[in-house]
Length: 553
Image 1 (cartoon, one colour):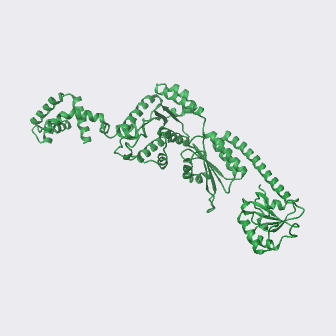
Image 2: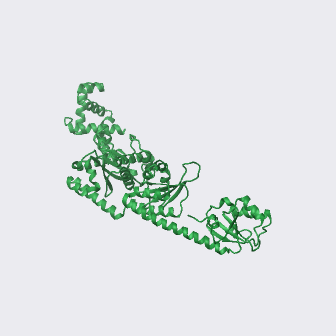
C-alpha cells in the first residue's frame, strides 16, 4: 500500500498536526522535499510533500499566500509541512486560510521534529512499499508460471485476471479472441479487435492503452501488449482494470507477457522438427503408404487422417503474367479475410500460412503445412476452419485486385488449387487434383480454384491460352486467306457443317445454299488443309479452333 499523508500524520515519532485539508490526507506521497524558494514550482514533479520554514515568504500577506498555495496545488504538490518555532512561532493565519480555500493539506511540524526525520520516514515507507510490490510480483510470477504449466494460456489468463483484479484476453495473429478470463470478458475483448489490428502494424514489442476515460460505467482501462519475438507479433494480450496498474500488478503483467510469448512463440528448432514430420507424412501419403503415414503422424497430425481432408497447393506467379478473370468470384469474403488481404506484406505464401494456421488454432483442429520448394502444400480437414479461411483469404485478395495491377511490376501474386475431399488412400490422386486446379487457376486468371469447379461450366475458357490461339490461327489461316479473295465462304460453311454434326441438308439450310454447294466447299476445305473431315480428331481440332478464334474476336 503506498505511503499517504494520513500515514505520516499517524506516525507516532513525527508528532505532525493537521491544520487544513483534513479530507485530503489519503493522497499518495511520492517524496518529501525541502525548499525555501518563493516559487519552488519549477523544481516540483508532482506528488511531493513540501517542507518549509517560510524563510523567504511573506507568510502574513493573505494575497501572497493565496498565490503561493494556488501555484503549489496546480503543480501537484500533495501537502505542505510548516515548521513552527523557527521563523514563526505558529503557522500564520494567512497561510492557513489560503490552504483551506485551496483544499491543500497543511501539516504543522513541531520544532523537535527535524525535516530530515520526515524525509527518512517517507523514504523508508516508499522502500517498504516497493519491497512489498517486488515480493508480490515474484509471488505472482510463480503462480502464473504454475498455472501456465498446468492449464496452458487459459490457466495463465485466469491467474493474471485474479492478480490485477480485472480481466485478461489473448488474441491470435489475426486479431481474433482466443481465450478470456473471466468468461464474461469475452464480449468486452471482442470490441477491441480493431485496436489489436492497429497494434500489429507497429514493430514488436508494442503496447497501447485503450479506454479509461471514465465516460461510462463500462469504460475500463485496457492495456494491449504484442506477443512474440519476430518482426510481426504472433498474438496480443489485453489486460482490463478499473484503474492504472500498480507496481505489483505491473510485475504480474510483464511475467504474463514473457510466459505467453514462450507459450505462443514456439522455438525455431521445434517448428523445424514439426515441419520435417509433416513433410515425411505427406511423402508417405503420396507414395501410397497411409498406414506408415498414420504411424509417423502420431498425435501431431494423426487426427487429420481419420476423416476426409483436402490437399491445397499454392504458389506465386508474377503479377504481370496474370490475366484478370472476367467472371467475378461467387464466394463472398468475410470481414476478417478482407482485413488480412489488405494487410498482406512480403511473401504471399507466408501470409497464407499465417492465415491457415491461425484459423486452425482458433478452431482447435490440426493442419499440416509443408513448404515445398517454391510452393506451399496444405493438408486440412474438409469443411474445417483452415480450408474456409484459405478460400476466403484468396477470394478477398482476388476481390481487392484491379485490372491496373496486371503488368504493374515484379510483385508476386498468390494462386491456389484445392482437391476434392479424399481419404488417406487417395492422397496421391488428391495432389494431382490440386495441381490440376492450380493450373486452371493460372490459365483463367483466378487466385482460387477447387477441383469440383473444373467439371462445371464450359471447357472453352481453358482454351484461353496464347499457345492454343496460335495453333488455331495457324490451322485456319489458309481458309481465311481463301475467303479473303472472295472465292467462297469456307470458314462459315465449315462452322455450319460441324455445328450440324455433318448433316448436309441442315447445314446447307442454315447457310442458304444447295447441299451440293456445301459438299463442294467441304472438299475444298480438305484440299486446302490437306486433312480428311472423315477423321473425328480432325473435326474436333477444327471445331475447337473455330471456337477459340470466335472467342478471341
